[in-house]
Length: 513
Image (cartoon, rainbow, N blue to C red; front, side, top):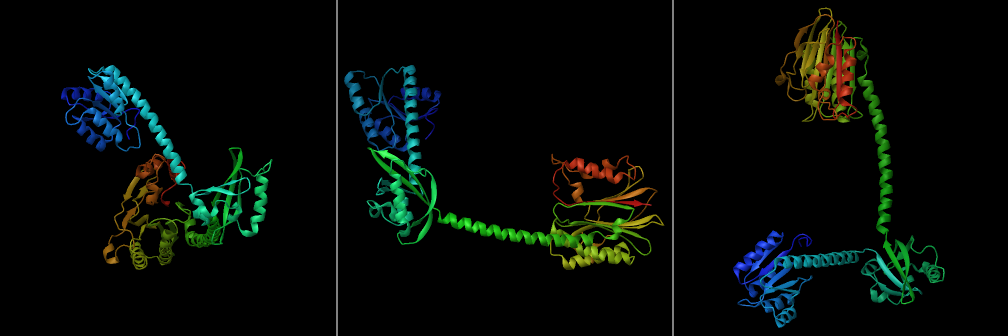
C-alpha cells in the first residue's frame, strides 16, 4: 500500500459531476490519488476493484444511495480498516445517526468546508498510519513465529511437557499429543535421562544453577532411536505463580557434519597448497637456470623483467657468437604466469643453440616460428624482438614481431630511429606466410637500442593512465647513456606509484659501441 503518511488513495462518490470535479481538484492538490464514482453501485464496484484508503461518500444518489453503499462496503472482508466519511446536505440528527449506523466513520455537511475536510483527512491519515504500523508489527511477529527452525519445548517445574512448537515434531518425530504430559527427558538418549532429570530438579530449586540462559551442547534422540548433536538453552518464566521452563533445542548435526567436512577440506587444501608450493619452487629453480645464462652478464646489456605473478611470460636472452656477433632477444608469450613461462622455454633453447652457430636473424626467426607453430595450441603465440649487432662494422639487424616498436637513441637521448612492429608474433602462421625481412641499421657513437614488452607501455598509474611511448621518450630525454636505464626504471616506478602490474614488464637496453 502507498505510504499513508504522505499520500492516500481516495474514492470520491457524488452524483453531481460539478461537486465531483471540485473534490477531485482539491484532493489532487493535497497530493492524493483520486478514484471517482457517480452512484452507490459504482462506488461499491470501484471499492472492490481499487481498495482505496478512504471513502468520501454522498448520501442522496440514484441507483443506490450512500447508506446502502456504506453498508455493503463495510460488509466486505478486509484485513484493514477503511474509513468512510459521508458528505451530504442532510444535516438532521436522524440522518447523522442513520449514517453512523450504516458504518460511516465521520460526517461532513454540504456545502463542504474544505478547511474542515482537510483537517479530517489529516486526522484519518494519522489513524491509518497507526493502523499500518500495527499491521506491520503483527506481520513481523507472525513471520518470526512461522519460521522458527528450533524446537521450543515448555515444561513445568517437574519437567512435564506442557507445549511444543511445530519444529519439535519435525526434529524429534514425536507428535505433540505423544509429547505433552510426558517428561522432557524422553527427548534424550536413554542412558542420559537420569542425569537430565537431576538437572531438571536443580532448575526447579530455590537457587537455580548458573546455566540458566546459557547454551550447551548435548546428544538428543529421535523417535526412531537415532542420536543427533543438539544445543539446549533453558530459560525460566513464572505464569500464574507457577515456574515454567522453556527449552530451545537446535539440531546441529548438519553443522557438525559441515564443520568436520571443513576440517577435512582445510587439511586437503593445506596438503595441496604445500605440494603446489614445492612444485612452484622446483619450477622456479628450473626456470631460473634456463633464464639467467652467462650471455645476460654482458657489459653492454642492462635489462629488467617484472612478473605479474610468480612466473613471467616475458623473457630476455643474450649471447655472443664465436665470430663476435652480439645477439639479444626479448620475448612475450600470451598471458602471464606459469603457462606463459612454459611457452617461451622452447624459444630460449633454440635461441642459444642457433646464436652459437652464428646464424642470421631471418633463419633464427623461421626456426623459432616453425617450432612454436608445431608445439603451441591454437590461440597461444610468442611476440619477439630479435637483434644481431656486428660491432666491428657498427651495423645491425632487427626483427620485430608483435612486440612494441624498438628505438635507437643517440648519445643525447633522442630517438634517432624507430623500428616498428611490422610482423606477426611467432606460432600463428606457417613460415611461408610469416614473411618479413629484418630491418638493417647502423649507428653513431654512444647509441643505444631500447626494447620493451607491451606490459611496460601499458603499465597504469593509480588514475588508470598508461606509461606509453610518451612516458618512455620523456624518461630518456636529455639523459646520458650511462644513467639512461636507471632513469627509465625510476620514471616507471614513479608512474606506477606502487600500483600492481596487470601484465609482465620487460625492458632491455643495449649499448651500441
